[in-house]
Image (cartoon, rainbow, N blue to C red; front, side, top):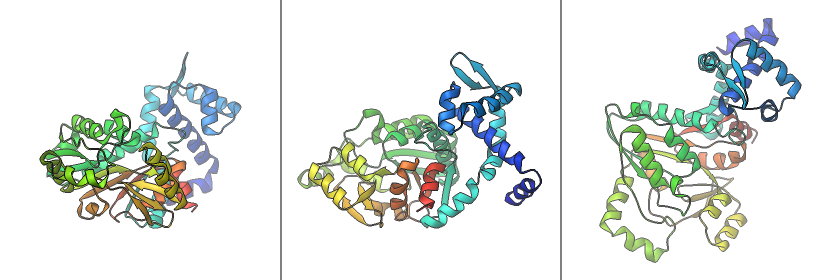
Length: 342
């Protein structure tokens, strides 16, 4: 595909540029519809005059329509987006970028969606659809226990799962960790419940705070109801998790001020599973916790890390260089470009 594209560019270079531009406009309207021209121009970093010329053409081709609330895709426009997606991944250089990112991070699989979720939050839905595809491909038939983390990204991913991945499988979703005092709808327990609802699977709940003192931690492990769920978590053969920025996650957890100051002093940039990493891949702090441990990932059939946005590039790189080689990273173009810039 890449060779064919280069040949086309050598004959009619403007054709590829125009196709790229118009596809990106259609895709962003699809993500944000209904959307006004001024907002779309700002999102794309394009002048309103140039955008007006392109959208007038797309309207004449009946790919978009104008409403009182803004521009929307027509049915023809949606079919066009779907039909060109694979070709445009190649034209936009995403396939090559995926290979480069895999080599850079030292993992086998990177999947990149176009755009930057910092500016286009709906991109997370595209990432969620990829999670669904990977689970459908990688999970073995029969019984599967899937550990999932909480957070806004994971809550959005949960809405994208479908019953297709449950065909010939018995799925049980378990929280990878206890609650962290955040909004109820994005806690791991609720994310697992939604994943089970969307797939027709089962879920178990762990009503234990993640960050507890050592004196509290040990007795809790002896509680039969807690012990049963923790044992199930440890038996997980798959994990779906996000990656957070260290200080942001510490503040979200309402961690003590002296611990946050220590994380800043040790230059922590990334957090996942309660482990905090610096830019040099070193674990600088670990929360005593009930739930999945980093070492539990080694024997899993399927591990999926989901994180995007250029602002998370350092956090993603810091963790992924510690991740098991078989981990799938699902990210976006904004984060991938920043990581590859070093």
